[in-house]
Amino acid sequence: MHQEPILAVIGGSGLYNFKDLEQITTIEVDTPFGKPSSPITIGKIAGKTVAFLARHGIGHVLPPNKVPYRANIYALKTLGVKRIVSVSACGSLREAYSPGTIIIPQQIFDFTHDRARSFFGEGLVVHLSTAEPFCNSLSDILEHGVKETGAKYHRGGIYITIEGPRFSTKGESQLYRQWGMDIIGMTASPEVFLAKEAEICYTTMAHVTDYDVWHTDEAPVTVEMVVQTLMKNIEVAQNAIVKMVESIDPSYSCACENALKDALLTDPYYIDPAKRAEVKLLIQKYLQ
Image (cartoon, rainbow, N blue to C red; front, top):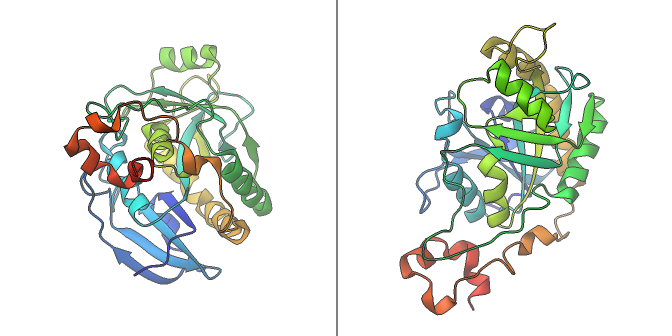
């Protein structure tokens, strides 16, 4: 039986290949929502257990709109994960956030339209508070880790998640800027909301790879552009993760651990038995 991971990392497979990760094993996890994107890699950093999950599958075979987000979060919950850091690429909608900058967003705008957004629904109604979607405490730890690497970063801003997998048109990109969005990506939603439903602290280390398509003095975003910048930033991400692990106090508790406390609306007597069984891991402490 594995020790409960002190932190889970959701990102690309390149993140796992670094010298600080020891005692590596890989485990298969199944969930009521299907299999996660990939087997979960477990290892030790600074003597603490850490879990890694490849969001787009091994070899990057899943587009953003086909990632099994519910299975991914549920699988990490079954392992006892209490904290998740997402590592992802994003486009900048602000002149000041140049490629190579790391953004730790504070807010999110969900502009996706074809994804399963919740573990709950018919048979069990839940109204989750998401005024503060990202965990401020874990974002503090992430900021400390990124700062220690010496990388250029910014704390705050609004991350708009689009459906993908195509990139934006210039008209769309310009509209997002007018709306006040700061960065754009394809994976933060519904991941951040599912983590909150699972009562897991969640933060994002978003790596700016391009200026989307709005910037008239820069070339429009391409896959090559995204990959090149991400490869340059892998070492930064790895070093920041090491610093995070070193800083985390396993005994520290957070309000995220009780996010569902006042969110369950359905009378327990009327909860659909099949749905109750499906999400038992998430709600059992409220149905004693």
